[in-house]
Image 1 (cartoon, rainbow, N blue to C red):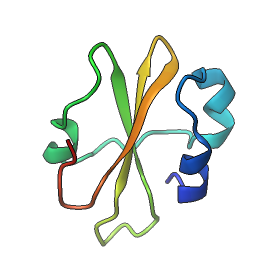
Image 2: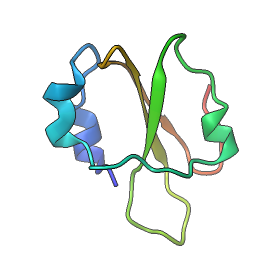
Image 3: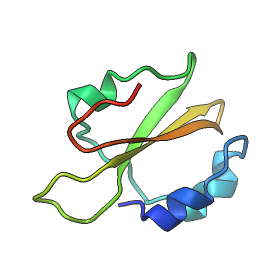
Length: 84
């Protein structure tokens, strides 16, 4: 889980090594299809993190997109809907 306060601290343009202390050890491995298929910046690898710890209910996902280990985009994929 990536708490909203930590998500807010993540600044685009910064290297992954500088942001590592704010990130969970692992990304969320099971984002729904609408989250995985949302448009992303070309040439990036994106990882998803749950915004809350409720495992039974829907929660927003945070998407972080990296290019050459630099954070180039961050956004929120609302629970149950795709964001373009």
